[in-house]
Every structure is written in C-alpha cells, then in structure tokens.
Length: 383
Image 1 (tube, one colour):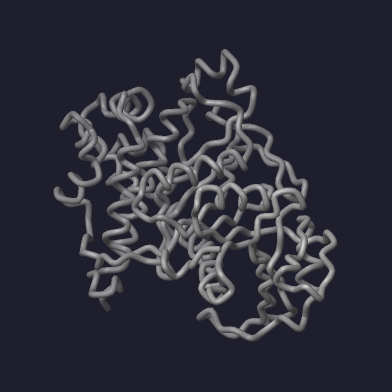
Image 2: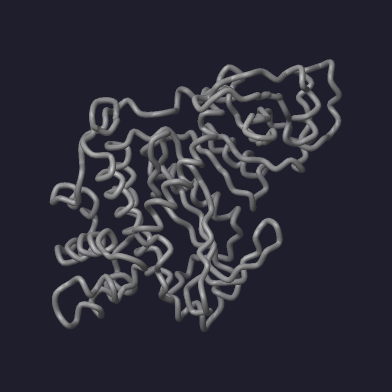
C-alpha cells in the first residue's frame, strides 16, 4: 500500500507566468532547434488563443503575414521534423512551476468527425453501445482542485490505420501498433512517469478499460493510484484483514453493498459523503492487496462510485479528494481545451495531429494562467 499524501503536491512554490512572453516561449520551445520553428510555434499558439470558432490551419494561417502563410503553417504542423515530446516535457515542468498540481489524471476523449479522412478516424463504440464516427484519444493531465492542464496525448489507431495505403498517407511511424484504449492508458502512464515532474499519484477515470488490469500495471510501477472500477469487476475480500467475512469471489458492487458496518461519514472538501474502504485481493493466483473505495453522495438519490486504490486505510480521505480531480479535468476541457482547438485538427497526418494537440495544450496552459491572474504565494490566483 502507498501513502498518497506523501506524493500529493509539490514542495516548490509556484512562480508567476501570465502570457506567452519571450521567457516563457523560450522555456516551452527551447527544444526546437531553429529560431524559425520557435517563432512558428509561438505564432501557432497565439493563433489558437485569438481565433474565434474552429481552429483550422487555414484560419490560423490567415492571421500571419504573407500569401504563403497557409502552406508554411501546414508544413510546420504536418511535415516539419520537430519532436513534440520535448515540448510536452517542457509544458509539464511549466505546469508544475506555476499551478502546483496534485496528481496526474488520465481520461479519454472522443472527437466526432465527419467523413473518413482524418487520421485515426473509425466507428467508435461507446460504453452503452452507441456508435460514433470519430477519433478516440487518451489525455494525461496535471491537475489540482483549482485547475487542470493536458500534457500528453495518445491517439488510438485501429488495424486499418496500420496498413497501407492509410499508414503511408498518414505518416504513421513504423513503431506504432494497433492499440486499445487500455493500451493508450498504459502508454500515457509510462510517458508521464518518464517526464518525471510528479511521481504520482495517478488517477485513472476511463470506463473502457479493465480497471483491475490497469491497477495491477500501476502497482507494478510502484505508483500511488486511484482507478475508477465498474460494479461488475470481480474481486475477493482480503480475509487477512476481515477474517470473519467470506472470501468468495464477488463483484465490486456486491462487496461495496455487503459491508454497511464499515461505512462512515467523511468530507473530502465538497460536502459530507458516505464512504467505505474494503481491503480486497484482485485475483486468486497473484493476490494483490488493494482497497476498494465505495462512495454514496447525498445529492438527490444516492449516487455510488467505486474506485481501486493502493492507498493505506488512513489515507482514504486523501484518496477520495483525488477522485474529484477528473471533474476538474472535465470542466477545464469543456471551458478551455475545446476553446483553444484541442478537437479541431482535421488533417490526415499522424505527426500533425500530435503537433497540433501539443500546441493546443500549450495554449490551454496560457489561457489558464491568464484567467487566474497574478499568482500569489501558495499558488492561488490573485483577485
């Protein structure tokens, strides 16, 4: 088990940054070798922030000088050989310095698209069986109770995108493989740990994955985590902790409902809620020990949510506070990410998608900092 409170937050005090000024631009785009690339990256971010409506390459280019601007912008995003991962690393370090994140949050996004030409587009089957034409991606966000900023992105690719002519047309790299959403989650977690700005905790709120499998993966990495789990996931009670109860296999939902004596009233910061923490084993063979967190919120009728965590029992309240962070991500995605064009890339290029969404994530940070105003001690925005 892990002590989540030891991993939450950062000892560094946030420092102010309010616009894409030369110093901030140098920090974010220092990995770009050529001054022309750094200038274009800066212009692209400014275009994402300034352009109203859908952020197309043509619309962004229209804000630059020169007749050849559209071709230049298209080349910079889709064909220019600059790497996006160093920019994402720099973005993560800037988020830590300015916004004092508490955890990584991993969440999926669906990007509906008309037609069939955008890279990664497929018939996407949603959890309730609804089919949508679009792209499916997984984002890794640095989040606190105040704000959330996307840092890393994984685009799910089906088998048809790994075969020519689509693979060649979309410039999909040779090492790319067919991926499920769970594969994307695992890659996202591996990437954020490699970035190294915050060694956990990791909150995974993805309905389309095997939560037990993801929890085992995170446990193997030695990361503190909280993973959303469905009520039908199979678990077993850890009888070394609760010897008077049956250790037969049951679902997470059955376990949460079967032990009302363990429930207690807590307040994670947004009002009182009823919670239960049940020691469980995730399989009969390997027997990883974790906690099943169940929560019943008193808003209207009881709304139960279930999570798996490797927190120690005394850290349950901290773990419940972390479960609020996906809500911050959803809020900021709707109010900021969509406004700066995270969903808007319509090209066929796989590298182009990654470059666009990386610069849109930079624009998200800039918009967040500008909305907060001056940053005071403790990381809170000034009035």
